Length: 201
Image (cartoon, rainbow, N blue to C red; front, side):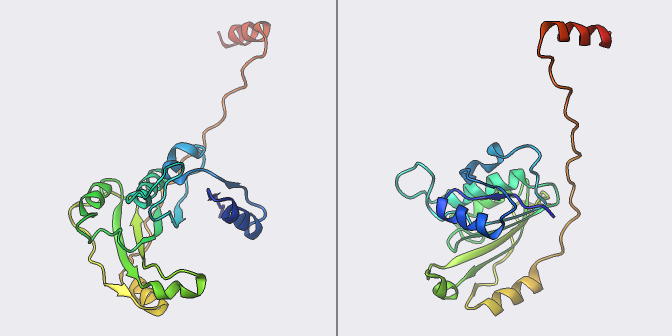
């Protein structure tokens, strides 16, 4: 396996560098991660915890911040890959404000699981904000209007793990891109260009 790590916040990026000392950590705004990563980075699994309502270089709250991150990451995911996101509890396919957005998203990836988690679960980590775990497989849905029904709000870790084991389907077969051979380096002189052109003819 190979890791591709990205974190915009300097403190958390430094923590990732410490935990995974042999892996470079990029610092892109992940709301446009698909436009910023090299073409060769085509992950089969994406684990993400996007900001709930903050956007880089934008003052004020952005209610769709997390959804923008998810959409861009799904674009980058390899066909058949799996995306797992932790967002605010208020961003879910079963909620009226987000239903149409998730229906549109299912044109490129099907939502296979989504459940809220009570904020008290993360109390010892310094937050009591309710969250949501959403799992998306990179395969267009047969019917985009059919969305998974949330089992509710998990009051503890054991409950959310039980729901995952019961409801999340097995991984799909992943189609990874075929490595593309780099073209021959461009000649550095007119003579070299003419020589190569003559040889090709």
